[in-house]
Image 1: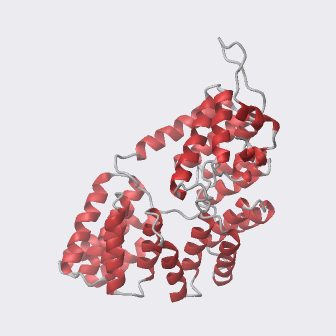
Image 2 (image 1 turned 90 degrees about the vertical axis):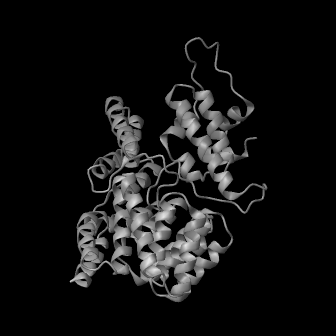
Image 3 (image 1 turned 180 degrees about the vertical axis):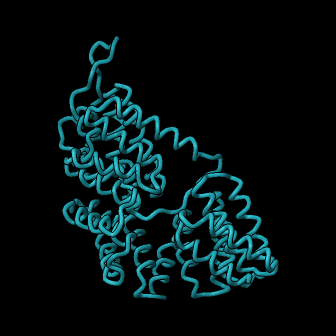
Length: 400
């Protein structure tokens, strides 16, 4: 009885958010039927963690951690129990503890592929050099399975190694041609390297298999980068009505409304995005899983990281240029175009790709003349801003 309920619960878990409530019900009953069933406890912990991701209710992450601890007390030799507890630690920003759990999982079962991938992700979040080797080891263990290839390909994209990434993703596509994650990551690579027709073809193919908020959002950004914003609007309108839509998708729709001068719709859509974001915000740091590269295209999600020629850590540079871009957007929205130009120039010098920076209406508009605000005696600009005005967007990084 307990084993049947456990297997049923694992099946529901494989459906993601749509099956998490049924999984919790089955796994709770499995645990009640056999209090010594360590696998059922581990799976129930995983279900609570996934419920937390879907709801952002802190009560579920607390349940995930307590039931996960119970599973390991019952049987510390089960790799899955350590993987689940490590994943719960990651949800609460405890990266070092997560690393130790994934290492313990691999000690229990060196072939535990999920543990190796999660360990590589945790290493990457801590900027540890072992990350790349862990991704490679996962690929070597099962060279024809798509998931390690996608994970390693995404890692390579995040570090700007596009040719290597494409090789891995194309191999994944050969092994799993209709897999949504493979399609999405390959499309993301094509977009970042400005092969928009190829990106569009991949995303349309993925949507033919079933529409999703992520796929529709990403296709919209491909249209935006191509200057076809009229086609982006209906994509994002459909995205926010699709399962899995969140504040990011709503804020992207608000942006395209603003860029197409639909101010009333932009205001109400921004309000909806803010309401969703507030509803999901909690006081726990780093409360999201590592995402596939193409999870959401956005002009603020540059992942290019150079080899450290300026002496700064790659993640430090990423955070600084992200902050600069966000400051620029705020200046633009509040009418301070000179401030926006200064911040956007800093973001460009920080490493934003040409496609991400130049392909959006906000940055294109910001390259026009500065606007005077009430009380100004002519907008004053810095040499860097004047340089940014004169140069094409892809050369703005030359401004100093």
